[in-house]
Image (cartoon, rainbow, N blue to C red):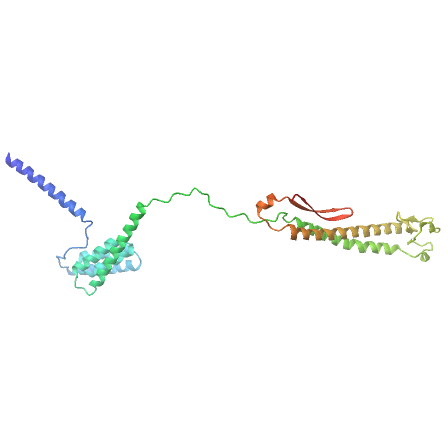
Length: 313
């Protein structure tokens, strides 16, 4: 009975001891995979294999395939654990991958195996710098995790103001264009009409029964040979011997009249359009355009032409 109880107590103690040892090992953090003493001597085959693995690792490192390089250098270290310089290559590759912890493990194992190496002080500084970077990164990550995100702003982003616009658009330039066309038409019709009139006009002494027209100040003085002639105007100033001359004279007078009107209207439209554009069509903000109460409109009519301004002030 006592023996059974003693065996039970011993078993419990063993379990507790193993549990405590495991807990202490876990509490100390991850173990250095490169630590420990080298208790074996590499054979010639091991050395040759290590040389081949080192050559392959170097090629992978130069191509930027750092994980593959680490695999081959670890093979070198496993084949010849006295090749402690391989630990520096492994540390360099881990740093390239951003794995500072394993780089520290490799460098610490190198210092443990070669404490009197010429570059020991430099390696110690390198280990310190890597640990400082680790601590700084951990502090930054912790601060980011504990800092609450900034509250989302409920305010709408302010939009830029709309670009200014001309209140009347291109209407003033359309007016200028129409006026210019009228000026061109008048400039053509006026000389053509004057040419038609002068083509049939003759003096009284040159008529003598021939075709043509002449002008008199008093229609009552127009006697024979005008029995077949026609009065060209309501004013009674033109008399013609034949209808063809009469028609040409009337056409010429009409062309002269239309040409003068076109020149007058066209000139007024061009001038009014330019004034409209330069004085009243300046760019303004869109809000002011909507609230504007002033209107400027070109106007053309019998006996008048210009620009009409209306609105409330």
